[in-house]
Image (tube, rainbow, N blue to C red; front, side, top):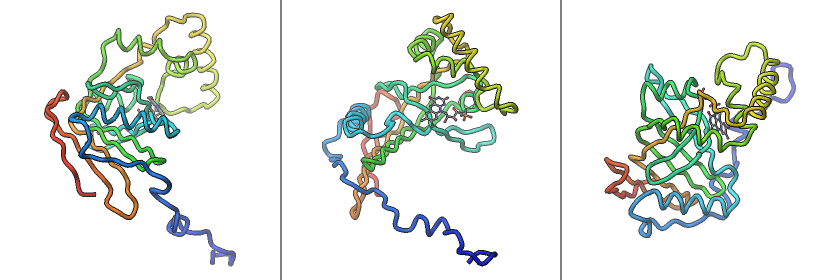
Length: 227
Ligand SMILES: Cc1cc2nc3c(=O)[nH]c(=O)nc-3n(C[C@H](O)[C@H](O)[C@H](O)COP(=O)(O)O)c2cc1C
């Protein structure tokens, strides 16, 4: 009962009691048939996620470390991935970019809940050259280019009415000067040193396979992990 005598709000624990996790029909994973390197397996899982209608499979959580050694994380979009690494874009003056300049190591995480799958990638991060970065920027839809040109990412927004005005101005600029490249657009690639594939198996042991290498081009060590 609450202080005023009415029914009390449920606690978080009560709200979560019985909420299913790792539910539904899940894909299989045979780690013994996994390829020798992680990228082909990532590609296979991404293709399966797209085919299965997983929402936003390209949304990945990016973890960085600040100057005090405190971890920070946020979702970013995967722009591309190859054997060389996982690529994402952001603003060069954003907290995450500054954290990467100070400590060029990161981790990214994909969680595809419809398939009870997660993929963890860890390793050093390198920033792309100006030409590659400009190409990535110009590849974007006008709205996304305008959002980037607005800038000030993660700065305090003291006057919220300034945001739509800034966006309209940026969009007008993109339309008037379609070759404009945001000088603060930054592209980073996380070079894999460790990639773990996790497949949930309710009621039995979850399947984990980790690839480890001292170099991104291998040779890769494949290890099964206890769940
Ligand atoms: C689905 C989704 C995709 C996002 N994609 C990006 C992205 O590609 N680049 C980016 O800078 N921020 C992206 N964001 C916003 C970031 O999560 C974050 O709010 C912003 O980059 C500021 O982060 P920072 O203060 O750590 O630098 C995305 C957010 C979501 C929820």
